[in-house]
Length: 621
Image (cartoon, rainbow, N blue to C red):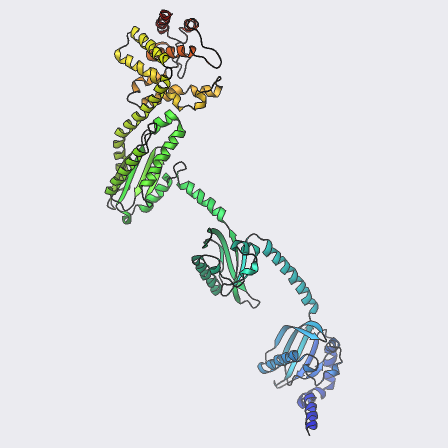
């Protein structure tokens, strides 16, 4: 009985529905025509009944599977394909019949007798004249060649992509929906301090960066995946727990799958630390004084706009002017003057708070703004500045700055008037301070010159005696005699501004060096003008190297236009030069010197002064 039932069952499984059979075989002419038609179609074409049994197949399909068309009638896919693939086909066809919706161009891999094929299949419902589903109709196309070409192309693209990932200098990464790294390139691995890119898989920014930076990156990426809106060229500081921060320009875009669903983010990061440092340097230079490192005037003017508000009151403004800079510049040169300014600036930096705006206003002027600060606090700061200036002063460089301050207490007060008030107070203080500082510097210069003169010993004393004797014989007043004494000590005060190598050069001076030497009288004049003590002889210092015939320097004046003190000091110091050995000649005898002075009397030297001096020398002989 069991065998009969099994045979009966097989017979039923392989039999075609009667209804379908009637439709097909009652229209044999139409069926024959349809068969001829589909036999000429290059794709696999078939019709199945409601039980997924083949009713019609075309020659292309039969040839493809190495069968004849009649071999398919009444059979299912299980007779030709693996159980798994046959079930897959049945599920698709049942779904088509149940929903009445077609499956179009489904790409799938088929293995038939050990050989792989790629097929693109479409299945649609098969209706009768009344709209009832009788089964399915299918078309399947062999796309193996196309898939292989695609795989080849994809292989090339993958190879290109891998080459790009491995060799591009920018950091490239892919992250999944949880912001975990899926893939990074070599540049990113090096940046993260990893040996290989694979080490990053599954890690997050929290494993690489500081918590603050990782938290912000995670937030940005979640927004990108939620909205689909990218971030392009965002400049950010990448901070780490165990190494220096870096600046980066980062772009992040949504990462889509083949169904256009966002599955993560793709990012590319370029290191811009050098550029940012350069920009910061440019910004620093644009707002800072290059000599002192303090803020400059441009920055101060920007800050005063920002801080001149009611919230910052009381707002105290200080104006400062350095004392003695001009004398330092004239006596020792601008390099020493720069050192002088830096020392003052360093003291100011120490005395003010970080939130105070300490600026170099220009030249020897400084301006400071103290937000939320009353005038009483400024008084304490001034005391400290004076104390530090005194502690750090030297005899050659007494540090001093005159400062005045004023405070804006109410919003209605004009800030320009507050600045003017501070400036006026500063100038009142400067009148006394600058004189005192200048005199200290001049005293130091005089002492330096006196020490040099002392080296000459008795010769130096004798020269001064000669000068004073000439002055008395010319009936100069006691006041002028005292000025002559002073001039003999400081006539060459300007030489302190010269480089030592010029003053001590053994050979003859070059043309350029002579140009520098000829500036000595003017430098000495400016120094003398800054001192109450030396001011009376400033003209004599300026005219010391003028010749009686007008061939001297710096102004080329002649005769009685040259101050008498200059004519005396020039002759005495010329005598001293002739009486000394020089690298290019030996010292002259007194007889030779007398002949030389007579020769140049009326040319270099004042004849009256020369006559008196010659008599003094002849008496000595």
